[in-house]
Length: 294
Image (tube, rainbow, N blue to C red; front, side, top):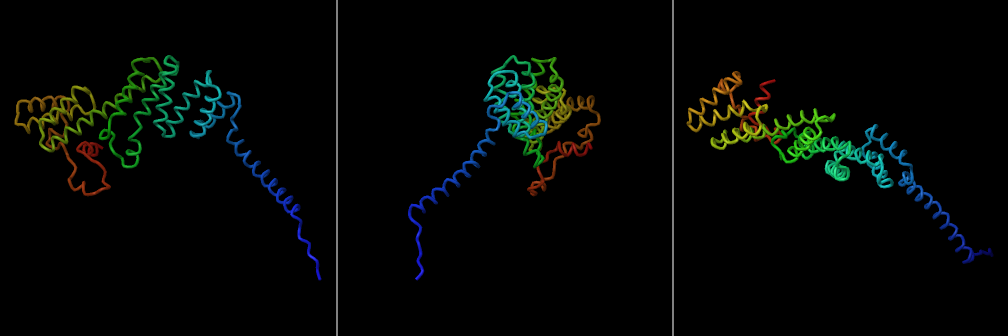
């Protein structure tokens, strides 16, 4: 008969305890390494943090740059590195498409340092953010005209650039701010003209004339001023007011003798059949005009 010895209860408990200790030690090592990696920037000198974040910026790693700059600000809330980090955080957020976060960072900086030497840049950057937010996805994917979208944020962008141009006329950003203001004015005037042409197509001649006059008064010398005069001529003709129509035609003849309205080829509205194609995108008489001008 073969004798079998069952392990004692004490030995089983001892082996189980040793196994738990080994597994726990290995797990704690991995867990500790995970937290060590997460808090690798904890306690780093401010210069080292700034260099690391700036390197991420140079490499186009906007998320890593933002995270490191925020760590720098949290550990060192005062000083020139902190001020620079706040500026570059806003830029990194802008480049990564986090427009709301960028605006919050910019506004925080302006409130905290209203007379800072970078104040002009922060207003300029806010203009860049506001001129590209909201409509960026629509424009890139569907190629929609910004003038037909909500103009609240482009208008805010115009005001931001105006602050740079008026309050900091000698800054390095003033000249570009003025150019962007001109481009935005053309966007606003195109919006008004699109609306006027919409009314004109529906024979709402009074509304079309009022919108065209608003364009001429609000955005003088814009890219679309001659089109606005042509709209006035067409609207007054539709109303049967030949005197005002003739005056508008005379002004158009003087300013733009080759305008297609004078040859009876304007406005060139897109076909109604286009609306049956859900992938055709938005088009107006101005789009046809732009196409024909190429």
